[in-house]
Every structure is written in C-alpha cells, then in structure tokens.
Length: 283
Ligand SMILES: N[C@@H](CCC(=O)N[C@@H](CSC=O)C(=O)NCC(=O)O)C(=O)O
Image (cartoon, rainbow, N blue to C red; front, top):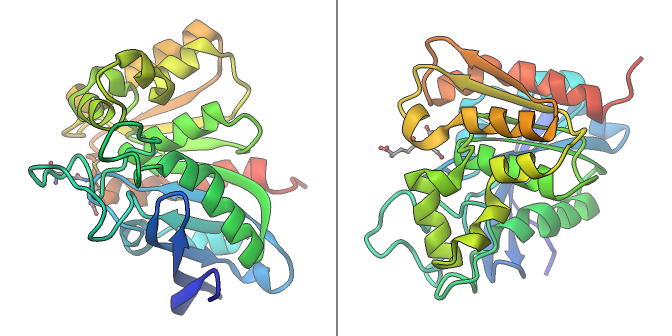
C-alpha cells in the first residue's frame, strides 16, 4: 500500500489543492490532511508553511476559509494543513462530547494519561511524522515555518520554541498564549497529561518564552473584539515573557476583529509575506 492515498486534487491559482489520507504510526489511526502545492513545484522543491487549526476544526476550515492560496502561489510556499486530533471510532473523546477536549481538540501535546496516550500524540505527529512523510512523498524542501489559530496558535508557538532549528519562523492568530492559566488550557492539559501541573509547563508558550532568549522571528495578530480574548487567550502573558527573556516578538492588536476566520483572512497575506522572508532566498 502506498504511504499516501490521494482523496482530492484540484487546480487553484496555478497550483494544486490536495487532500490525502495515511496511516499514522504515531497516532495509531488513519488521518487526513490537506496540502496546497504552488505552481513552482513543477520546477523545484519548495518550502512549507504548516498551519495548525483551532478547536472543532479539521484540515478543511483553513483550506476553504482563510484565502491563503493566492499569495502562497505567488510566493512559492506550500501549505501543509493537518487535522486537529487523532480520528476514528477507536479514538477516545471527551466523556461529555464537549468541543474543547478530545476529537477536534488534540491541543498539539503528547498525552501521557489514560485513555488518551495511545492516540493523542499530536506534538510528535505534527513536528516529526508528518514532515518526514510529506517531504519524502511531495515536492517539498526541508525548510519549514509554522503558524496557527487559537489552539493552533498555541501549538505553533510551542513547537517553534521547543524545536530549535526546525522552523525558520513562527506566527499566530489569537493564540492561547498561557494555557496553564486559562480554562481551555487547564482542562486539556489535565486531561492529556494528568494532574501534576509541573508537566504542563512544556506546553505553555509564555513559560517557554520567558525561560529562553530566542532569535526566532515571531509575529502574533490579535483582534481586540475577540470574544475569547480576556478569559482564554491572554496575549499580555506572551509579551511579558518576551520582556523577561529579552526576545523580540511582534504583537499586533487589530481593532474591531473577532476570533473568526474573517480575521484570519484579513491578515493571512501579512503572515505569508512575513514567513517568506525566512523561507525564501532574498534578492
Ligand atoms: N463552538 C465553540 C467555539 C469553537 C470555535 O470558535 N472554534 C474556532 C477555534 S477556537 C480555538 O481554538 C474555529 O476556528 N472554528 C472553526 C471555524 O471555521 O470558524 C463555541 O461555541 O464557543
């Protein structure tokens, strides 16, 4: 059996919007993901931007709603868009079927607590297994950057801060910036990692950024009309962490924008051009 089963392949801005299924060894289940290949892949391998989506999403929310492909095609950057959790009938979900834990809410951690540890290894899936797979099977170079929204912004920041040298740059839209101190984060970290809160810190971008001075280029956009801003997102913690470690971070507060994909669509071009400065040779 081939490593990648192609589910769909459609022409878009001279490139190809594709969807694949594959067996994940890390997650112990079959997974789907989307990729946009820009037209430049007809001539050469191109760098990738990984996009991590938020709660309740699959790989299809970003593909359909963010409008990222036109600029990705112009710049020659592939978009790699994974799902947000392991999937399938054998994968345990939130006991009450809540939207903020379990299926669609993997939080990009490696779970250690039963019954989640067998499947919920999203950190290793996104940072290791998926890149190895797509770089072997598709015309992608090993240059990568990473971005995401909300739960996915948290995942992108944590992976880029922990995996030194793996990503050229990181950006986020309305990230869950300090999950050890917000309801979404505390529920997820307790469920996936257990009650010992010392183990949660490795998945908190503000804790990680306060503890290390980084030269990683970091861009964060946050709408000031976001309904989750004060209770769940806490960008001020990320800013304070950058001051503590002396790291540079660009945090832009966007007046009037909420938490939706309309916000993402409004600024995704800025993020793609930001990442292009680190992914592509500059003339
Ligand atoms: N249903 C929930 C909120 C769900 C939600 O807003 N999900 C966001 C991400 S939130 C953080 O990770 C999202 O991207 N949704 C998909 C979309 O296409 O908009 C509630 O009612 O509060």
